[in-house]
Image 1: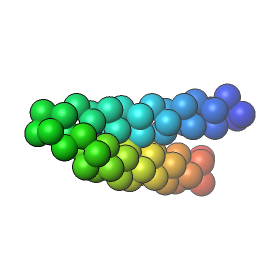
Image 2: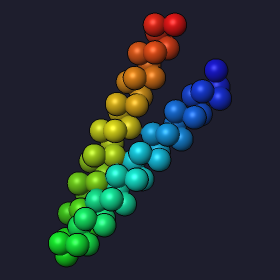
Image 3: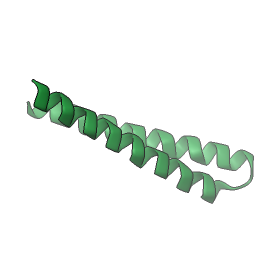
Image 4: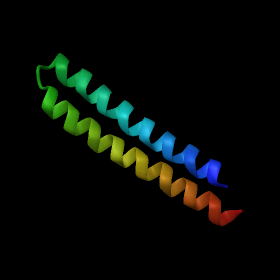
Length: 62
């Protein structure tokens, strides 16, 4: 059970970091790295929350 929780935390962190770097890249294209980073972080937090909500949902249905 502990390994599953750790894997979900790693997955959530990876989604957050990936979204942030994608935002930075897109922001760099438009010469707006700061705004891109903030947008990427926002999308990453939302993605992380979705993963957390799904994992809690599957834990309660088992």
